[in-house]
Image 1: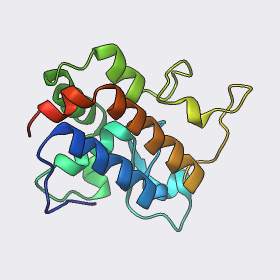
Image 2 (image 1 turned 135 degrees about the horizontal axis):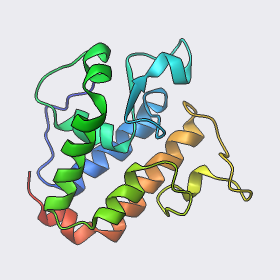
Image 3 (image 1 turned 180 degrees about the vertical axis):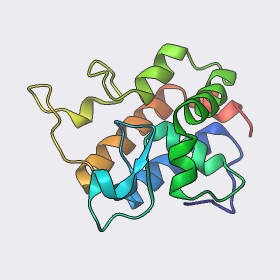
Length: 154
């Protein structure tokens, strides 16, 4: 589980770390679940835990190392509440946060890159293309809320 020694100073930097982590570790990114066993969604060559964007936000802010079993046991409410509260305190609208976190929202501009012209998933999880789509969605969110994210000190 990545735990950066160089903690971000604001939410914009944190979101940038999330986008970077998603692209660097595509097999540890799965937008359809808060947290998931990476081997189950991305094959035997994946390791540890796969996170969605909210999961990555929470994991990168954790001060303790946790194993996959801990994350799977404590996942949904902990991750959702932790990540959501960080963004809400920055003044990000709840609808925008939900659009960023919830994969099912095909209408969400942050998830458009996942879908092909027919509205179907255009790439498989664990692939660089899937990770790029996830990171691109995060960067679109960052561009839209850059001022608020940079003003929110951690």
